[in-house]
Amino acid sequence: MMRQLVVHTSGYSSSCGLSLRGSCATLTDVQVLENAIRQVLRPSCRQFWVDCRQLEALSYQGQRAFLWADNQARAVGVTLYWCGLPANLLTQLNESGLALLLHLLPAISYQGPAELLA
Image (cartoon, rainbow, N blue to C red; front, side):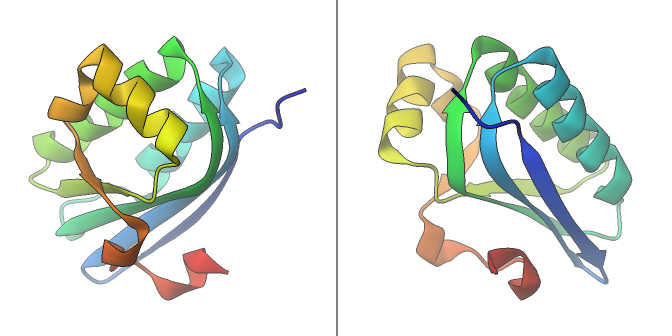
Protein backbone atom coordinates (compact mmCIF):
# COMPACT_ATOMS: atom_id res chain seq x y z
CA MET A 1 0.00 0.00 0.00
CA MET A 2 1.35 3.43 -0.96
CA ARG A 3 1.85 6.05 1.72
CA GLN A 4 -0.14 9.25 1.36
CA LEU A 5 1.88 12.30 0.35
CA VAL A 6 3.30 14.38 3.18
CA VAL A 7 4.80 17.76 2.30
CA HIS A 8 7.08 19.74 4.58
CA THR A 9 7.45 23.42 3.63
CA SER A 10 9.87 26.24 4.26
CA GLY A 11 9.99 29.69 2.81
CA TYR A 12 12.03 32.67 3.83
CA SER A 13 14.15 35.33 2.11
CA SER A 14 15.23 34.12 -1.32
CA SER A 15 15.25 30.37 -0.61
CA CYS A 16 12.01 28.42 -0.52
CA GLY A 17 11.31 24.74 -0.67
CA LEU A 18 9.35 21.59 -0.10
CA SER A 19 10.23 18.07 0.95
CA LEU A 20 8.01 15.38 -0.55
CA ARG A 21 7.55 12.11 1.34
CA GLY A 22 5.38 9.18 0.36
CA SER A 23 3.46 8.96 -2.90
CA CYS A 24 1.98 11.57 -5.20
CA ALA A 25 -0.47 9.17 -6.78
CA THR A 26 -4.04 10.22 -5.93
CA LEU A 27 -6.07 13.35 -6.49
CA THR A 28 -5.81 14.03 -2.75
CA ASP A 29 -2.00 13.83 -2.97
CA VAL A 30 -2.03 16.22 -5.93
CA GLN A 31 -4.16 18.69 -3.97
CA VAL A 32 -1.73 18.48 -1.03
CA LEU A 33 1.18 19.27 -3.36
CA GLU A 34 -0.64 22.12 -5.11
CA ASN A 35 -1.71 23.67 -1.80
CA ALA A 36 1.87 23.52 -0.51
CA ILE A 37 3.15 25.22 -3.67
CA ARG A 38 0.51 27.95 -3.32
CA GLN A 39 1.45 28.43 0.34
CA VAL A 40 5.20 28.86 -0.18
CA LEU A 41 5.73 30.17 -3.74
CA ARG A 42 6.21 33.92 -4.11
CA PRO A 43 8.34 36.15 -6.36
CA SER A 44 10.85 36.86 -3.56
CA CYS A 45 11.85 33.17 -3.74
CA ARG A 46 14.39 33.41 -6.51
CA GLN A 47 14.87 29.67 -6.36
CA PHE A 48 12.43 27.03 -5.23
CA TRP A 49 13.90 23.69 -4.18
CA VAL A 50 11.96 20.42 -3.90
CA ASP A 51 13.63 17.54 -2.05
CA CYS A 52 12.27 14.35 -3.67
CA ARG A 53 14.56 11.77 -2.05
CA GLN A 54 11.67 10.23 -0.08
CA LEU A 55 9.11 10.36 -2.89
CA GLU A 56 7.99 6.77 -3.48
CA ALA A 57 5.58 6.90 -6.41
CA LEU A 58 4.30 9.35 -8.98
CA SER A 59 1.11 8.76 -10.97
CA TYR A 60 0.06 10.49 -14.17
CA GLN A 61 -1.83 13.02 -12.01
CA GLY A 62 1.32 13.51 -9.95
CA GLN A 63 3.33 14.19 -13.10
CA ARG A 64 0.76 16.76 -14.17
CA ALA A 65 1.06 18.38 -10.71
CA PHE A 66 4.85 18.63 -11.20
CA LEU A 67 4.30 20.39 -14.52
CA TRP A 68 1.65 22.67 -12.97
CA ALA A 69 4.05 23.59 -10.14
CA ASP A 70 6.83 24.34 -12.61
CA ASN A 71 4.49 26.57 -14.65
CA GLN A 72 3.35 28.41 -11.50
CA ALA A 73 6.97 29.10 -10.57
CA ARG A 74 7.85 30.33 -14.05
CA ALA A 75 4.82 32.63 -14.05
CA VAL A 76 6.28 34.55 -11.08
CA GLY A 77 9.89 34.43 -12.31
CA VAL A 78 11.08 31.66 -10.00
CA THR A 79 13.20 28.65 -11.01
CA LEU A 80 11.94 25.40 -9.50
CA TYR A 81 14.47 22.59 -8.94
CA TRP A 82 13.42 18.98 -8.33
CA CYS A 83 16.27 17.28 -6.44
CA GLY A 84 17.04 13.67 -5.62
CA LEU A 85 14.28 11.86 -7.47
CA PRO A 86 14.70 8.09 -7.09
CA ALA A 87 15.95 6.30 -10.22
CA ASN A 88 12.61 4.63 -10.97
CA LEU A 89 10.82 8.00 -10.93
CA LEU A 90 13.50 9.60 -13.11
CA THR A 91 12.98 6.79 -15.62
CA GLN A 92 9.24 7.41 -15.52
CA LEU A 93 9.73 11.16 -16.17
CA ASN A 94 12.16 10.42 -19.00
CA GLU A 95 9.69 8.02 -20.61
CA SER A 96 6.85 10.54 -20.42
CA GLY A 97 9.07 13.35 -21.78
CA LEU A 98 8.44 15.49 -18.70
CA ALA A 99 12.12 15.29 -17.75
CA LEU A 100 12.86 17.58 -20.69
CA LEU A 101 10.67 20.32 -19.20
CA LEU A 102 11.71 20.23 -15.55
CA HIS A 103 14.95 21.22 -13.79
CA LEU A 104 15.96 17.81 -12.40
CA LEU A 105 19.07 17.67 -10.22
CA PRO A 106 20.77 15.03 -8.07
CA ALA A 107 20.23 15.24 -4.32
CA ILE A 108 23.76 16.59 -3.80
CA SER A 109 22.83 19.72 -5.78
CA TYR A 110 20.08 20.69 -3.31
CA GLN A 111 20.62 24.25 -2.00
CA GLY A 112 17.25 24.89 -0.40
CA PRO A 113 16.32 25.31 3.26
CA ALA A 114 18.40 22.84 5.32
CA GLU A 115 15.59 22.06 7.76
CA LEU A 116 13.72 20.27 4.98
CA LEU A 117 16.40 17.58 4.82
CA ALA A 118 15.77 16.35 8.38
